[in-house]
Image (cartoon, rainbow, N blue to C red; front, side):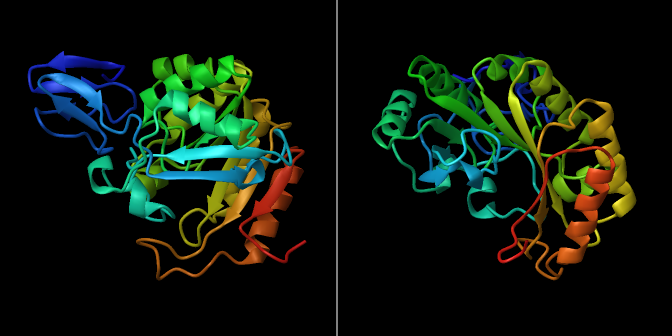
Length: 289
């Protein structure tokens, strides 16, 4: 049974993220894995990961949290955004009913992390907000075993569920996809205001935080917008939290665009350092300084 929903005349309304889908009987919400079954909201992703891997924690990317250790990484199908550039669209834009899944309940996830000598569990690849209950229950068990919990997310989540989940999250990498409400709507189907709140709440609750900004040609490579974003981060006390500028490679519905020029990423990094951010990295580039 899902958390954070209410009955409405048209069915049930999910309240875990700002989409707040009204879901009729037998139908799933926008994220494809929260379904109205006989007037109650269920997460059909619970215990049904479609991807399970042991990853270096640096792949999340987290460079200042348990370096040189491994994260037991899980994901289910589904996402509450619809990014045109999604690199995992084969699972994020699918339903758990359409993917080949592992039978892995929360206790089994934690046991597997221990067996594989992983210091952490990462809820990653797709969007853990959409498999909220699975992330929440697994995190609570992991905490009792001394395993750290990592949230790799777009941060598109309502305030109350975020604060409840953050009690059991030790570190997060949040995708700050742009610094424009219009771009968020057109490129991702989300909103900037919610994501900024997520950053502020995680910082307030002492969750270790690293931020990723994917620099996409013609979409998010406006250097003035990047300067505004870095200014906001500095003003709001994020100067000690790593910022990762990530290189775009043609994906999903943006295959006609070129990969991001390395020079653009270097300019973005210079802007961030000039703004007073102390730890700025460039990702998705091999063989670069």
